[in-house]
Length: 315
Image 1 (cartoon, one colour):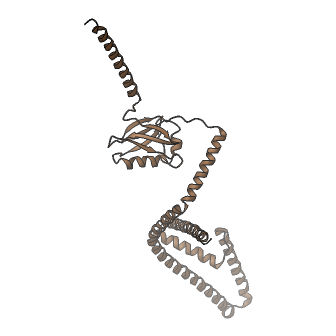
Image 2: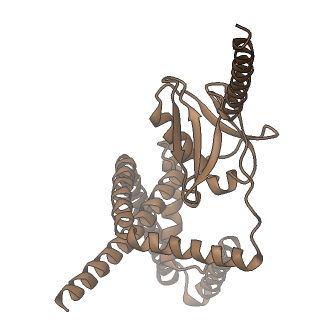
Image 3: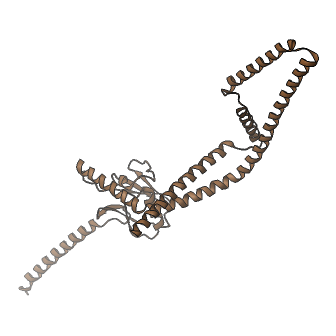
């Protein structure tokens, strides 16, 4: 029995050491476990990984971020698409200022930020990048520019087709808005044109009456010796009227200019009576012209691309 006591004591000491080591390793492992609600940012193969817990499924999910093309808005949209339980999501700076949806993720990950999901705020700490030298930074900018050009070249046709489809929809929408306005405008133009023509015919009639009255006074009532000064003053009065027209309108007195001016006067007067918005109509016409011109350019570019592909196939 005395021989067994040292063995028991040695066994107890060994057990205490093992238990102490297990507790040490257990506490060490527990200290490296990420809290379930923490949002972390890590880099893998040069790309940022944002890991967070989804509110509905209570599962950790990783989002791969493309810094050069992804924006804050696209990241939040991906988050809502992944978990429909995300009703509201926004990103703020450390001092509480909201970050716009158009901000690139590369710029966002330069500093710490706050992610707010369903009114719950998560403090996100971004790992600090090593500052690049001036030469390295210039090379990185050149590489980014090259990658951007390659991306545009590879996806140019797809982008142009989407652009063409968008422009066609825009043109159809603008034409739909212009159709009722065009009908109202046609009616106003017809009445304004009729009123302008009537005014011109009235002017011709008055000049005819003036000529007939002068002829009657010259040959039947008085003589040319008496009527000559009268005609002179009438001509001088007409010259004064024409000069006054130029001073007021800053335009030469021509029959086409007078007709156009009277037409516009009647047109705007009728437009106010019928509540026809001339400014809105002109804006829609300008937008339609711009969209049509852009569509022509896109189709021309697509046509040149197809011709180039046909030539390459023949060669």
